[in-house]
Image (cartoon, rainbow, N blue to C red; front, top):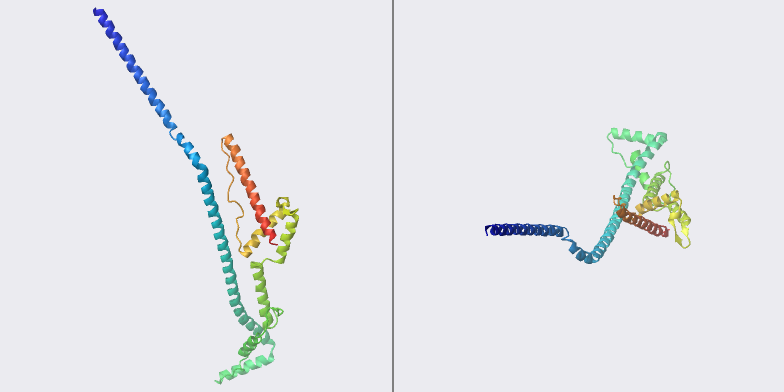
Length: 288
C-alpha cells in the first residue's frame, strides 16, 4: 500500500511537470506567433493604401502641373520685365550719352579747328587782351563761346537718322555717327538680325521632313548651332522657356530586377526630353 502511494504520487508529479512543460511550450509558441504577426502588422493596410494611391497620385500630378505652369508663367513675366527694364535703361543711357557727346564733340572740333584758323586765333588774342584790360566781352568776342554756340545751332532742324555719319566731319555728322553706332548696338543687343533669321530658316530647311520637322536628322554642328540661336534669340527678346525636364537619370542599384525598371524609366525620360526639344524647336522655327 505504501508502495502504491509512492508510485501514484510519482506519477502525478511527473504528469504535473509534463503538463507545466507543455503549457510553457504553448505559451512560448504563442509569443513567437505574436512576434511574427507583428512584423506584418502594417501589411494589412497596404490594400487600403493601394486603393487610394491612384486618386492621390492623380491629384498630386495635377497640382504639380498647375504649379509648373504657374512657375513658367512667372519666369516668363519676370524675364520679359527685366528685358523691358534693360531696354529702358539703355535708351535712358543713350539719351544722356548723346548730350555728353554733343559737348565733347563740340570741344573736339574746336581743338581741331583752332590751330589752323587764323581768324579764330586773332579773335582769341583780342578777347584775352580785352579781358585783361578789364573791358566787358561781348557775346561774339569769345571764339570758344562763339564756336560752341555755332556748333549747337548747326544741330537745330537736323535729322540725325538720315544724316551720313562721319567721325571727323561737322558736329551734326559726328553726332549722327555716334547715334547710328548706338542704334546698331541696340539692334544687336535687343533685336533679331536678318542674318540670324536667315540662318534659322536655312537650318530648319535641312530638318524639313514632309510637312513636319525632324531635328534628330540634323548634323551635329547644325543641331548645336540651332540650339545656340534658340538661346541667343530668346535672350534678346526676353522670352523664357524650360530647355529640359530638369530631371536626372536614376542611378542603377544592386538589384538586377530593379535595374531593368530603372532602365525603362530612364529611357522614358530620355524620350520625353527629346519630344520636348522637338516641340520647342518646331515652335521656334515656325516664328521665322
